[in-house]
Amino acid sequence: MKIFSQYGLPTAGFDVVSTPEEARYAAEKRGGRVVVKAQVHVGGRGKAGGVKLAHDEDEAFRHADAILGMDIKGLTVEKLVVAEAVEFEREYYVGIVVDRASKRPVVMVSGEGGVDIEDVARVSPEKIHKLTIDPRGGVTADEAMVLAGNIEPRPEIALQVADVILKLYDAFVGSDASLAEINPLVVTSDGVVRAIDSKMNIDDNALFRHEKIAALRDPSGETDEDRRAREMGLSFIKLDGNVGCLVNGAGLAMTTMDVIKIYGGEPANFLDIGGSSSSDKVLAALEIITSDPKVKSILINIFGGITRCDDVARGLIRALESTSIDVPIVARLTGTNEEEARKLLAEHDLVTAETMDEAVEKAVALARGAE
Image (cartoon, rainbow, N blue to C red):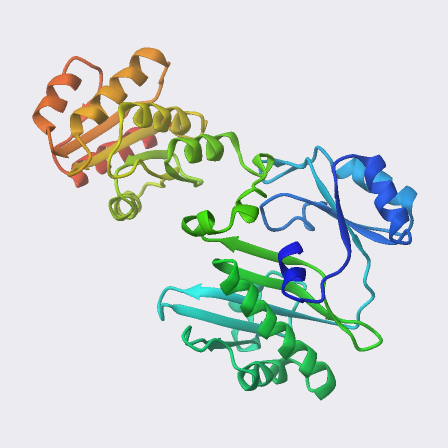
């Protein structure tokens, strides 16, 4: 919301608080009637009970007291936004995302604001209007007006929506975002357009250009696994399966997860240790994977180019010697120094494989047998 306001977007007033008393004061400052929102980096906060309307400062205190400490999708609520409550008559969705297919930004608008846009796309895709943008010229005023006219028939309101689209695109480009959205963008009873909830994803690779944005990182918004993976330079995404994956290279990691599915298994994570990995990274990766109680087997799939197979093997041996890994491990290491890696692993209780298919099949079977 701070970034949006810097680009002239009509945001609602708000305060960030971390105690019920602070919530009471923030509500009093804004006239009593406020919305108390959990600050966690997941969707569905409202459905989980993390967004509440307060009619006065005492109710704001009670809502804050109930929401703080709540667990929402594995994240503990440690901070709240106390935002002014805005009366409105209509809700819209306005968002911009990098489209991988066209390799360009796409502006999306819908008259179905206030709900998950994914649900709208699935149930009523015709209600989402899209425009692919040429990044050399950006969004023109005429294009913004056409988009606005698709969701708002009143010219005086559509002009305001078009202005929001133009300013949102400026914020999107200026912040090196991969996503910028307002949901909902509302029209008040007196005909004023306001942005009352917002979301941005910033490209991590561009954060060196945005020190103020990088400084906003909130460790409480990350799980312990996410935090450690980031600190160790690992690319990690937790999933819901039972086959833990330790792979080098994003492409091989995606392929490995696909093959796990082909063999009837479910990957527990995406984890890429990178192109040049030390044994410390491998140790950290295994500790992250084994912290998930759903993991019933671990698949290590390494194609050694820059990554040396013997480095991976040493990290694996350190993990086996220093931690109690009680799930079976299937290792397939091929490429640079693979012979040395095999010798290092020969004395340890591991299942080995020559090919990816063989490794995946064994890992899936072991996970299924442990259920």
